[in-house]
Image (cartoon, rainbow, N blue to C red; front, side, top):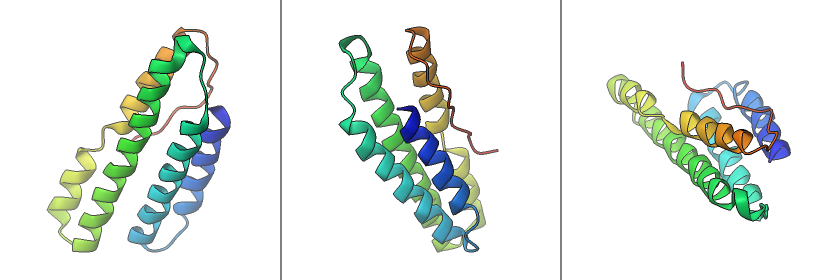
Length: 116
């Protein structure tokens, strides 16, 4: 899991260097989709299976939320963009799931930054 999340961080940082916002958001969504696929391949121990499923769902939700922001950027309405940015909740959900995994003894030294 740590390797997947570290790669996601690297991908996000690279996406931030793309000059066009829509293109950067597409890149972020692609990275999130790739992370979902890679996380789905992980076979967790039985005691972590439920939280692992939650994590996969949380990352999938993040991809959907980023894509919604991208669509609003493409549409060009500032109010809609601001509204969709406020609706991004997945980073908090991902971090809660990672914290629960840590409480069970799994060392995952990565957290997801939310929208500021």
